[in-house]
Amino acid sequence: MKIMITGIGGVGGYIASVLCANYDDVTLIARRKRKESLQTKGLVVHSDFFGDHTAHPAVTDDPASAGIQDVIFVCVKNYSLEAALTAVLPCIGDDTIVVPVLNGFTYHDTAAALMKRGKIVDSAIYITSSYKEDYSIRQEGRFARIYIGSDDADATKKVYGILNHPGLTCCIAENITVEIWRKFILNCAYNVLTAYYRTSIGGALSQLHGREEFRALLQEAYDVGKAAGVPLPDDIVDDQYDRILGSDDMDATSSLERDIAAGHQSELDTFSGALIRLARQYGVPVPMSEKCYRALV
Ligand SMILES: NC(=O)C1=CN([C@@H]2O[C@H](COP(=O)(O)OP(=O)(O)OC[C@H]3O[C@@H](n4cnc5c(N)ncnc54)[C@H](OP(=O)(O)O)[C@@H]3O)[C@@H](O)[C@H]2O)C=CC1
Ligand SMILES: CC(C)(CO)C(=O)C(=O)O
Image (cartoon, rainbow, N blue to C red; front, side, top):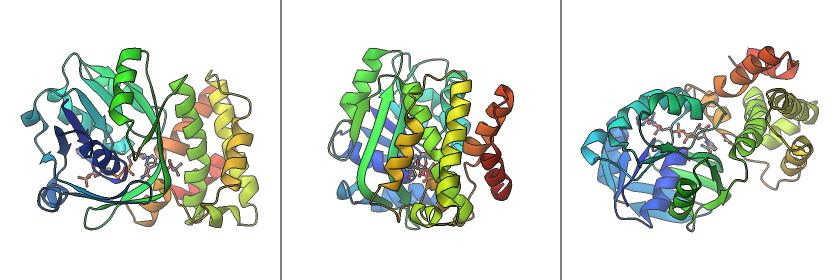
């Protein structure tokens, strides 16, 4: 089984670590100092859920040299997807499965437009993980859950078999579009509000109007999804709201908050930006999302 992972940051580094513990032929695609660090020190992961692991897989910045792969995980930010996927196109044969592991609801179409060969299995991941200055990976919290799905049942089953190991809870989604939107609705509230207040979810919710704002952001994203024809269950907003308010992990932040706090490029456009564009298309009011977007852009 030839497995490639491109994007060895918080998510990709973690998934790669789980895969390295179970497969021999794993290739990481990384660039510059990250590549050098991975080659010399290995892939170092410190995880609350998976434990501490160091692996020494192949690492290259020349994907074509690794040849055609069975499965390729693409774990970059949305703004890097085209470049990262274009670089691995020489490794995609007719039977190669590409698994984009990104937030947002637009990555499938971006990937499909670039790929002339291969199949796509979509995903939605719940994890809190980031890379540190020394390129090690730190995963926090006692969960790392990934939902997968596609029109191709065999491809989905194959990816399930590859991912379902200690360190990852893998679930085949009944409807992956719904799971992607369930996650997107959460991101439009959780990521955006933590970034807006530059704090943890507990810090954001304890602001004067934090809870109402969190709920309003969930509701707006839900309304847009419904208007766009996504078959979302009625209880998503209540469910997400209750789950986050009842969570025992109030110190958690989001990838958007961490990127904005660190002065990195962010996925604001993947969340509020994409939501606002779709809201305009369907005539759905999203005032709270617009307010946060204006403050963060
Ligand atoms: N982190 C988290 O806890 C969660 C993140 N997500 C989502 O997962 C996705 C990935 O996020 P995350 O892991 O946090 O991102 P990170 O910023 O931690 O990592 C992205 C990685 O992609 C690499 N990269 C960028 N461009 C290329 C390229 N052209 N070729 C090869 N590698 C490239 C970067 O390396 P370089 O330094 O070379 O640019 C970096 O290692 C995002 O959509 C995010 O929203 C979802 C749930 C939780
Ligand atoms: C929902 C959350 C906060 C954790 O999975 C996330 O998706 C992110 O940090 O981007």
